[in-house]
Length: 468
Length: 116
Image (tube, rainbow over all chains, first blue to last red):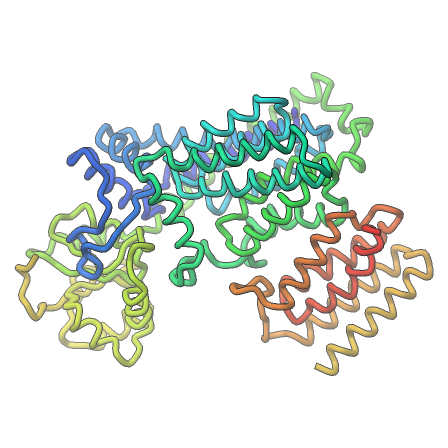
């Protein structure tokens, strides 16, 4: 895996910079910090939305990312967010390493392994951050490394991994589903129900039980099932089907899919997994890394027929002088990537309206805030005088709230009615947007904050500023 | 639509000719460039993404052909020259769902032949 380690080093640098600046770019960190603080204060998980929102107070909520939220709250209290950034980076690196090791164990050559690790790394790039699903990828990669390479009862190590996964993120529901698909593949390959199939079947049942080993109990699988059919998915970018506009798809998953089609998937046990992974990824952008992690080792093994170990380049990497020069280049490139990315305005300034939110919260009284991008309102949760229309938790908010958000953002005919009905008295908008132009033309709204990217408008509420 | 249909038919004819000539690489490149380039010009400004929710018929057809391809492997059994038109047609179909029949014409025969 000599060449693959060089690729992992380069992407590790990218992941590290992305994680370091994630608090400035990832709004979810702020509602997760708020959730973690609540858990530390009250000693239990909240299972409903509170009065921090004025549109959905009291509605049920499944805080599936409670473990990461607790970690973020503790890290922020200790001014040690860098620790979480480091852990996220290491998880990204470990995910790629596990993918490469699985490829080598399946017989892939040096170069073929490096090519597929590169594709898997690109597939992870757009979704990477200090996010629960990033830790879940590592557990997914570890689970399928075990399934593919560990003989006998060693495969049951997947069960505790699934239990950990379930406490991190609801995507743990993929574990029993994909294990069931794996069992189907084993049955197809064995052509009869034997001890191998029996063992895989028992493993599937065990992983299904493992997802219940969380403080959420049955709520977690029920939440995951409702999310699959929820109409709000249409409003979330990561739930949209894969498209050629996504770099993670174009440079990550698409080469792997094309490779699978051209070279074949090989062993029959892998075909159901490939079908399931491809369907998941093509149906939702958020599953692109999942599919890439699942299929990259198998594609690397198939690619080896055309990039065998006997190739001169695969022999060259065994020479110490060659690898010393190569790693020296990798280290220099890593340093350059880190320095250049760290100075990019995109990372330095961040995408979140933190100054705008502080200005909005500084206005005296209690306010009902609408954010043009609902994720921004996660920043408002830290301010006790702010009540929000909808924030980054998004899925517990009912469909009616989503529809009203669309009406406001597009300033459709009833938008003023929606404002009045909800008594919204502050709006955080993007400069140049339709909503910003509409608010700017009204005399009852005044600008209380403006910078190069965001504006905050405020007005007198009908009920005054003092309400619960 | 008639123009698209004519392009699909001409692609099928070119492919047949390419296979009859033992699928020489130059023919494959010609097929890929002519069919993809020509139909992309036709569908300018009216892009319809292939992968949709809920699934559409073109999406299901392309997905099915991809899975049949993966089961057998297109370049197995000496059909390597189909690799380039296959890839080009797949990318074109992903760009615009109206190019999905093009991909099916290019890929389905080779995919079924590799599987059988």
